[in-house]
Each structure stands twice: as C-alpha cells, then as structure tokens.
Image (cartoon, rainbow, N blue to C red; front, side):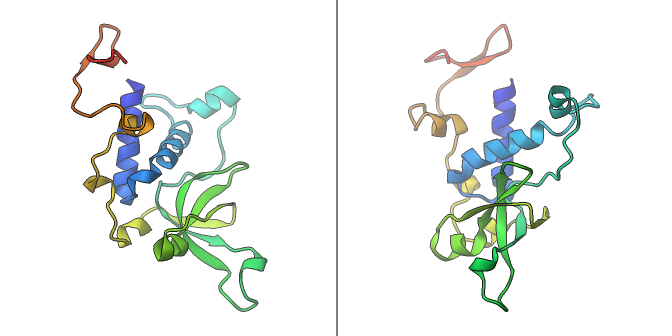
Length: 173
C-alpha cells in the first residue's frame, strides 16, 4: 500500500543523501511534498492540481541536496560572504526552501534552519556524503519503529490481508 511506498521513498531519499537517521521526519515531509507535485504513473495531472485546480509553479528539490542561500545583512560583515552552503531538508511556507546550515552542522552539530526563497540548489551534490557519520545504510532503521519509539521490532511477521493492506500478525496493525 501507500505506507510501504512512502517508507521506501523516504529511506531511498535518506540513503541517497547519506543523511543521519534522525532526519527521517524531514525526509518524510519532503518526499510527500514532492510526491504531490508530480504526476502519478499513467496520469497527466498532479495530485496538487487536482486538489487546488492549478499546477504548482515552484521548483522541486532533492532531499539532502546542496544549497547556497543568501544570508541576512545582519549576519555577515560588510565585505564578507553573502551566501552560505546548506543542505535542503524540506520546504517552508510561501514557496521557500528549508535549508540546514552545513558549516554549523559540520563544525559542532548545531541545527540552524533557514526558510528562504533566495537559494540555488544543486540536486546532484549531497554534502552529508562528505562527513563521516553513521548514515542510514549503517543504521538498523524502520520508519514505523522510529515513529512508535522503538516499541515495535523489525523481526515481526507481516501478512497481506484480503483487502490488500499489510498488517502485523502480532498486533494486527
């Protein structure tokens, strides 16, 4: 079903970016945003256009891609750099990109997020790949397990019901 597809797409986004597993909630929202703005297989209209009556006119980005964004005047010296390198982790309101300050993350692990329209994204470069941290590939990870706080283990058995939905044979969820 759709939840299995969503989990697969989200894990794929995390693996592609080599993002830490802790960023899964941002990846889910990012994947859903992009999913709704692309035509489904065999369709010509996007889910967004179907709902709102017009196509979305913004630019779509790959989760974890490199971004260069404009820094506020109060945050840089007169002749200092006016842009910073970041990582796209989602979308904000009013057609903005949600960007993580890469230098702050790399240097001390601090999370500085900026929602900005003044951004240039390179969808082929992934800054998290430059760092040595346990990416999603080295982490035992399940979105469902993370969501419920680890209460469900991955060694459960699942079955497909007659209606096509997948459920756990232990808890029937």
